Image: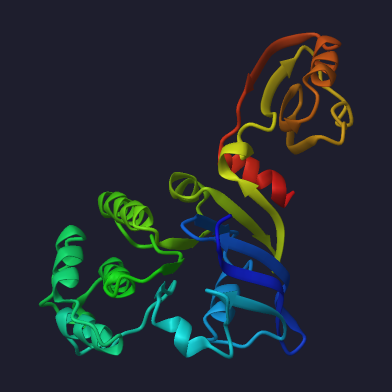
Length: 293
């Protein structure tokens, strides 16, 4: 049985009366690439900052490598690479100086690693931080997170601002690190990216985990996307079957996502005088919307 690298139990964080997260629980196994997904403001960053003891939770507990995230934060930090969603650096430093400074914090000689990653990500080490675009600053953050070869990577919206070609190189680097045994927590609001890289995903809504899913199973549990045109306008309650989401109707044209017995759906469809019907597997984005409605 795989060791649990991250264990979060009933984690909550309140800012006064304002809830950040509430009762969040999930585990990430050793060697897993685990997705943490939800729209902006769902509580992903609050959870990650609580994990890293950048803020202290109001209730609940979290461990990394079996160590308490608050009490043993300093011991944990040396084995973790963290990429925040928004990074702020010493603007007057050159990229090379900043990365050397980061390497010194880990008391390691990372020159070779810095050169390799910078070359692959097309990051100019001689430019000043202040002259970099948002995307290039994100590349600096990626290199800083990886340079000390951590056992765990925690990535918060890592691809924002990065162009598509560099994004593919970044995913390639993550897969290589994972093959070496590195565990990865990948937080994003873009489900298509999570699908590319992750095995399981926790879905966060309004500060709470509403589901933990296996990516491969999300598309194999019987979801169907239905689009139809009838010969006359349907009553809006006609497909009120308890298994319908994302329902849209414009006169005699109807579309929705269905999860349930195919026979029940066919019974409903066969009773209609249809001009056209289209049934397909929905995208992961559309399945994701199902959880939010």
